[in-house]
Length: 449
Image (cartoon, rainbow, N blue to C red; front, side, top):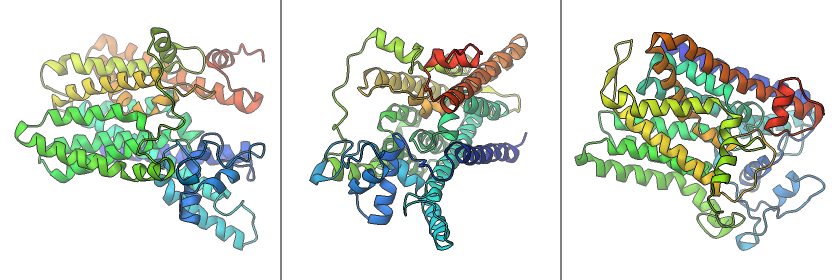
C-alpha cells in the first residue's frame, strides 16, 4: 500500500472514531446532560475563562462545571492572589481551542435560531468542538507515529502496527470515550516531539528543525509534565550527530523546549506562584517492589501490562530493535530501503523512557481511581507502535514465525479491544466502574453483578 493510501486509512479511522463518539454521547448522555465530567472539568475550565472572560480566574468556571452537590469555587484549594488553584495543565485546552471556538459559534447560531444548547461557553457544540479537536489530534498522533515507524523500521508494517496499537491499548478509550482528558493530545504531543526530532537528525542539518523539535518537546511538557522521560529519545538522536554540530543543535533544541513550555509556566505562575506547581502534589512516595508489581501487573485499577498485554509486545520489539540485527549492523528492508542504525538509539532511549515513566508511576503520590486501566501510558503509544512494528518485522524475517507472530499480536490486540468493550458495557448498562477482574468476568460471560 502506497504512502497516500496509508494516510487515507488513518484519516478514515479518525473520522469513524469521531462519528462513533458523537453517536455514542448522543445515545448515552442525550443532548442536554453535561459532557464535561470528572477530571475533564479542570482541563476544560481554561477555555471559557480565556475566551469569554479573558482571564485565569477559574472560580466562576469551577462553580459552573462542578456537580450541583459540590458548588465549590476552590476544588483544588486557593492559589496565588486568591485565584482558584488548578494543578491540571493548560496545554490540552490550548490545543482544543480551534474546535472550541467553532463549537461556540455553532452554539451562538443555535441560540439565535431559538435552540437551547446550554449556557454560553459550556454548550453542547462547544464541548463537542473541543472533543472533536482532541480526536483529530489523536489521529494526527497516529499518522506521525506511523511515519516514524515507517522511516526508522519497516514501512510495510507501520500501518498495521499503528492500527493494532490504537485498538488494542487504552489509546482507543481516551480517543473514543474520554477525549476531553489530556491523554489523546498527549499522544499527539509525544508523536510530534519524536517525529520532529527524527526529521531534524536527518540531513541536511538545519537549526530551525531542532528549534521546532524543541518546541514540540516543550508542548509535551505543557500537556503532561510527567511525560518528560519521553524526551530521552530526542536527546539520543542529538547524540548521534557529529560532535562538531551537536552543541549548536542541542542549544536550539533546549531553547525550543523552554519556549514551548513557556505558556504553561506562565499559567502556573499566575495560579500557583511557581513555574511547576507543588500544591496538591505532595511528596513523592517510596519506591518498592510491591508497588512496582501493582503498577505493572495489578488486577485492580492499575496494572499497565495486565490491562494492556499488547504493550509487552511493543517492549519486546523495542528490545529486539536495540539488541537484535539492527543493533549490530545497518540493514535493508524488503523494499530495498536502507534503515539507519539510529533506530538502535531510538529503541534504547524508548526503553529508558518507558522505564522512567514506570518509575514516575511508582512514586507518584496521586491515587488510582476508577478508570480504564493503564491510562498513564497512553503517551507512550508512539513508542509502542515502534516496538510492535519491530516485532512484526522480526517475525516476518523468519518464515516459521511469520504466521504465529501475526496470530499472537492480532489476538492480543483483539483481547484489548474486547476488554474495552466489556468495560464500557459495565459502565453504561450496570453503572459499575470495574477493576480488571470484573471486566474480564464480564468479557467472558461470568459476570454475576
